[in-house]
Length: 119
Image (tube, rainbow, N blue to C red; front, side, top):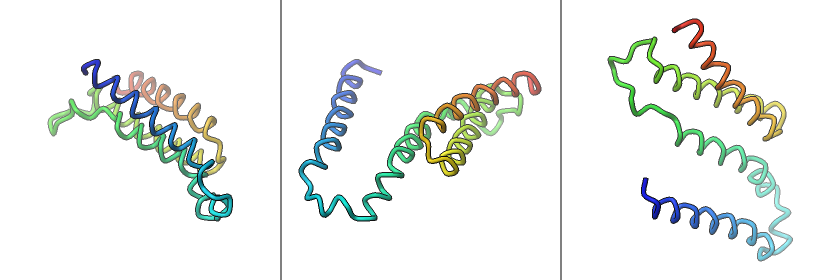
């Protein structure tokens, strides 16, 4: 990746963050109290986290001939398993931090299991 891309991406993320933080101050209070906006606000952090994880999945080195003992396949399965566990834990607890900690532990635990038992 070029440094100009990283700088542009950083500024884009900063602009989106600024707009989303400033927007509630500009919107009338009556509109902010609508039920659909509250539901959106509850699911937005998880949605962003899921999108970030999905874009980082490592499937580029996989092909039809990839075997079950491939490290690339193990990584992809561990990532998908951790993502599903994060979704489940968030659905049960509604705690984003707890879900993230479980996801990090799950991906590391699954990779360890694959290394120990599948070689």
